[in-house]
Length: 460
Image 1 (tube, helix red, strand yellow):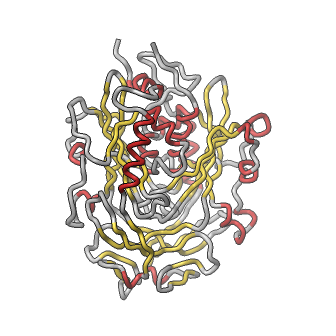
Image 2: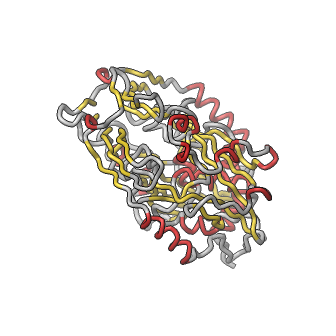
Image 3: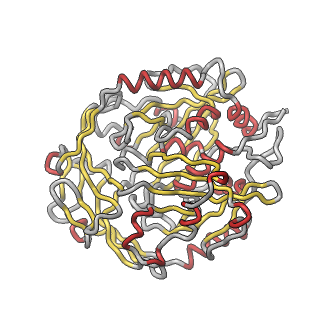
C-alpha cells in the first residue's frame, strides 16, 4: 500500500526525537549559534544610509540600484468601511522571493532543514527560518555578496519531489501586493548540512512554535501549506485531510470581493497627508500605527556583512486570534473576509480578530473589531494556544503579534458577527491554502499553530 504524504506528515508530527535530530540537541546548537552571533543593528538617521535616498521629485525612499524595495505613498479609498479614506507610506517590493524548505526522510520520518537566521528587525537576534528565505535581488546577487545557500534546489523544476508550492501574499497594510513563493521539496540524495542549518521533525517544530519569537513568519507560512491530519479526520493510508472546497464557500468569497470596491493607488511619498518626516523617522501625526525608520546592520553569517536600509516599525504588539469549534468531530475556525489596501484581490480570509488594540483609541467606535473584547477576556481554560511571535524581520523592526487559538465554548460557538464572517472547516481552509490570495499571512500562521495543538492521527 502506498503511504500518503498526509500519513508521512503525521508520523513526523509525532516524532519528538530521532537518531538524526533531538530537541535537546537543537537547543544546544541554537544556544551556541546565538552566543557566536556578533550581529549589531543600530538605528540611524536617513541621511546616514548608504545606497538609499529620497527621490527629489517624488520623495520616495529608494535604493540606488532601483532594486530591492522602495517606500512610497498609498492613497486608499474604502467605501462602506468605518474609515473610508486615508493616505499612508507603504513598502513596494514587486519581486517574488523564495521561501523554501528542503525535506528529507531519515529512518522513515520526514525531517525539515531549517536555518538559524539573523534579520535586522528581529527583536532577539537569531530566529528559525526556512532553508531559503531570499528576495530575487538577493538570490540574483544584486548586492554583490555571497550566493544564497541551497537556492539551486528550488531552481530546478521537476528534479525533486514537490510537497507544496504556491504563491502567497504578505501583510496587506504594510506591503503593496507583495507575494512570495512558498515551496517545500523533498530530496532523496545526501546533502551537506552547512553551518547555521539543522534538521528538525514536524513535532519538534510544533514544540518550538510555543516559544516566543523563535519560529519566524516565513517558516510558519511555508509549514502551513503542508497537508495535515487533524483530529476527527477520516485518515489512513490513502486518506486525505484536505476537503474539496465547496462552491458555496468560493461564492461567498467572490461575493464579498464584488461587494467591496476599494481603491488603492500608489502616489509619491511626499503627497501622503497626516504623516511627518523628521531626520530619523516618518510617522503619523498622532503617533499611532507605525513609523518608517532606518537601520545600520553589521551581520555575521549573511551573504552581505554590512548594509543600511529603511524598515517599518509598528507601534504596539498586534493580536491575531481564531475562535474554533467542533461540528460532528470536525474542527472549524471562524474567519473574517478582511479588506486590506495592499492585497492583490480586494480581500483575503483572516483570523477572527486581527488588529493592534492600541490603534483603536483614536478611531471611530465602529472601527473596533468584532469580538475583540471576547478574545481579550477569554478564560484561560479555553485558550488552546497563546504565543507572541515575530513578523518578517527583513522589512519590519521588532514587529510582534500575539497569536491565540480559543475554543469558542457554548457562549460563542454559534456567533457570526456579520456577513464577512463564516465558520469554515479547517480541512477546507487547507484546500484554500493550496491556492494564491485566499488566506492571509496571519491566518496561515494560526493554521500552523493549530497543527501544534490538534494532535494528528497516525495511520498504522
